[in-house]
Length: 277
Image 1 (cartoon, one colour):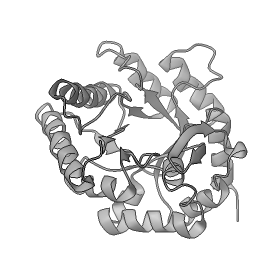
Image 2 (tube, one colour; image 1 turned 180 degrees about the vertical axis):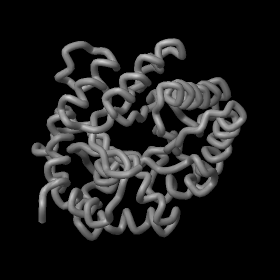
Image 3 (cartoon, helix red, strand yellow; image 1 turned 60 degrees about the horizontal axis):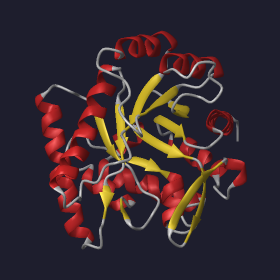
Image 4 (tube, one colour; image 1 turned 60 degrees about the vertical axis):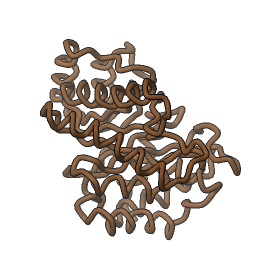
């Protein structure tokens, strides 16, 4: 990636038509640079319909990513549910790749009251099966386990970074709001933001900072973690300081805004990121 782009988690709310192609056009009109295909309920694009999406993204110079369906648990004890989870990641990656996206993200799974180390190895084994199938089928796309917002979910920063050392196309999706909520209010200062990026660099190398997939929103939380997303200005998320740290570290990639006011807040982030000190 040549720069840090800002965009929305799905079709912008202001789009005149609720189609992906029109959403891409709206992103361009708004002056944003990326859009995440929201496959969170299902992979709604077919392999036949992706050509128009790919062409629109190229025409309007919009970078695409995708979010896999929520119904994924790579630590499931149920073989049918596990295979369905693996298939959802695979299908998201395949369709996103055909649409011209460069990166997908997914929610890895749950601890289910098991030893976190055991869960890590379960998820790693099951994710590598997906990666091997993608490799065999020539689908070259980044697959990113996301940092999660509840302590009951697998996906703290160390866990997603460790997974990312096991295959060249596995990299993290850093959700700063989730890290803030998971810790019941931490990860919200300049020093803590710097610690996150330093850890990414220490584990994965400086190149990882030039290929970031970031989620951000305001967030409501409790001692049990994430409750729901909020507009940035209605939350305690220290987004101004976060933008400064992104700028200081010269990171590159995409920032996907998951706020209820997603395009307004994406533009707000872009404004603060682009402003002079």
